[in-house]
Structures are given as C-alpha cells and as structure tokens.
Length: 405
Image (cartoon, rainbow, N blue to C red):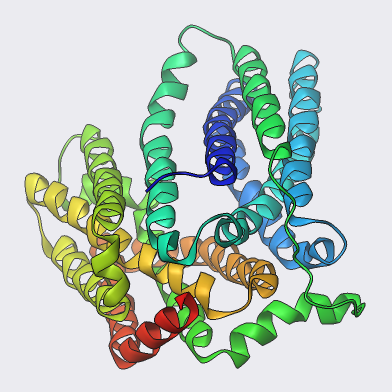
C-alpha cells in the first residue's frame, strides 16, 4: 500500500503523539509516587485519565458540529501541548500539599486526548480509498501496538538518566512536532446538512445511529462485552494471576504482557499482508477471532504452566487483533463519513465507561472467589461475542462490501 500525503501526516502525527502520551504517563506516575510514596495516589492517574476520556466521549459531538475535523484533531493536540508545558512548570513547585492540582491538568489533557481518538479514526476513511481501508487500519494498529509494547520500557529506562520533569519537557517537544504535522492535514467536510441541532440532540445522535443501524447495534454489544472481558488483562489482575495461579516470579507478568502485545502486532501485520483475502470474508474473520479468543481465554484460566501461559497470551493477542481490524473497517463503512465522528464518540464512551467499572468489578470478584474465575468469566463473555458474530456473519460481509463499491 502506497501511503498518500494526508494519511502519512496523520500516521506520523499520531505516532509522535502516542509516544508522548506513554512517556507523559510514565513521568506523571513517577512524580506522584515520589512525592507521596502512595501507590493509591499513583493509581488515581489512570483512573483520572479514564474518567476524563469518558466525559470527553460524551461531549465531543458538540464540537464536531462547530469545528472542522482536521482542526478539531490538531486543536486538541495543541491544547494538550499547552497543558503539558503548564504541567512541566507546575512540577517545580509541586508538594504534598498541592499535588491535587496536578490531577486537574492531567484530567484536562485526557479530555482533549479523548476528543482526538474518535476523530483520528473518523479521518482515516476521508484520506484513504475504500479498497485500502482495511490495510490502512492494519498499519495504524501496528504502529499503535508497537508503541504500547515498547515505550513503557523506554520510558522507565529514561527515568534512570532523566528526572520526571525533564521527561515532560521531552514529551512537550514531541507534542509540538505532532501538532505541526496534524495542522498540515487537508480540511475535510464533516457536515451533511446546514441544520443546526440542539445540544442534547447532537449528543444523542451517535447513540441513535448505533441503535438504528443493525450492524452497529451488534458491534456496540460486542464492544460492551469485549470491554468487560478485556479488564482481566490489566496489570493488577494479571499480576495476581502470575503469583497465585502460576506460582512463578513476578517477572513473568512482564513476559505474559509482552507476549500479548507481540500477538497484537503480528495480528496487525497479518491483516496488512492478507487484506484482500480478509475483505472478502470479514464476517468469518470476526467470528474466528472471537471464537478463538474465547477458547484461548478459558484455557488460560485453567492452565498452571508458565510457558503455556506465554503461548496462550500471544494467541489471545493474535486472534483478538485479527478480529478487531476487520471490525474497525465494518464500522467505518457502515454509515456516511459525516456520521462517523458521533458513532466513534459513542463507542468510545462505551469503552472508557465500561472499562473503568469492569476493572473494579473484576478486582472484587478476584478477591472474593479467586483469580481463575475472572478469566473464566472473561472467556464466557467472549463466547457470547462469538455467538453474536456467528449469527451476523452475513450482515457484516454484505455491509462492508456494499459500502466499498
């Protein structure tokens, strides 16, 4: 696939922004922990980020109606850059008495990040030909997963030679470059009518589209169930599984997590390589990916051998991504480009809202009845997803092919 100018700018801009996001979170968590010595205080960083992104997903449709998508994406990155430099200066006078102001800035940065994510996904079909959309999604996902897999290690390593504040300044430079690149994107028309809608009506628009579009209604349920199922792979639960179920050293948590990311990366690469084959059988791939994830998660829950856990974790990532990228393409081709932004903000609200609640619920279940049961529950949720995918295979295929003609 030959990358055009706009898609290349979008990819490179998001590459720098995503690298910066990971390094920024590493520096912030380190700063809070060094200041307070409290793991609970540090854990409020991801909680604050998730909560702000959820609110952002609900309110972004109000901005979509008023602003061009290109400038909404670039503007949100510029706002993040300004807030990050404010955060950097705040570190100088930070103390145990005023560190809660830190969370206010973190929340605002996450708010603008939550605004940028659905817009980036919406812009992809504007800059890529329909027949190249699945391949483009694969490239985008590969870059995202490589960053997620590698930058946490890089960020932790940088803290050995840099202070958290210096790391924030480095992130600021990355954010400036990302802002410049995204500002160079061509404008796109994101409004299908001149009618001005009320605020509540605009917020409800994406939810109504999900409800009224059969394939999106199924995908919304799939996202809901998968998001709950995915909470078992968060650090806190996986760490307990390694200690209590596998009875091995804590370093295996990193190995298992890394194997999962490697599976995600190879799954993305598979979708790029065989995009033309997948295009013809999108529904089948969504079903195979969800069914395989169900079986593999159940096997993971009952396994007690560390090396087998590595293999299973790798396969969960592989098949999960082979399902996710075609599913992303179905979403992008199920409605008009003008409706995509509100669809993605609604799906984003489902993801961030349910993930926060699901993580808490799974943690409580793990404490009450044992760590293995939460993986069994996750597997059963994925079994339900595979049933939905199987029943709607033809719907997914027809929808995708229809839109690309």
